[in-house]
Image 1: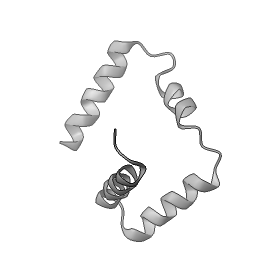
Image 2: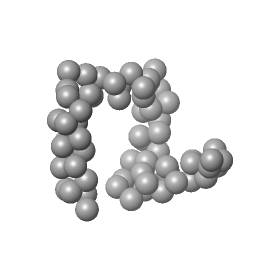
Image 3: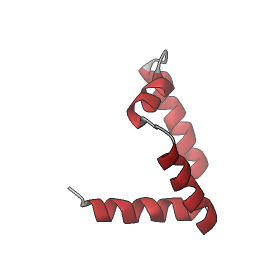
Length: 66
C-alpha cells in the first residue's frame, strides 16, 4: 500500500501532465471548496448503465488517451 505522501505526489504529477501550475492549484482549490463526494459521483456515472456499456466507454476513453 502506498503512503499518503506518495499518493499526493503522484496525484499532483498526474494533474501537472494535463494542467499548468495555476490550473492545478485552481483545481485543488475547487475540490476543497466543494462538498465533493467522489464515491457518490462515481456511482452516478454508471447508474442506469449495463456493465458492457460501461466497459466499452472505458475502452474508448483509454484509446483516445493512448
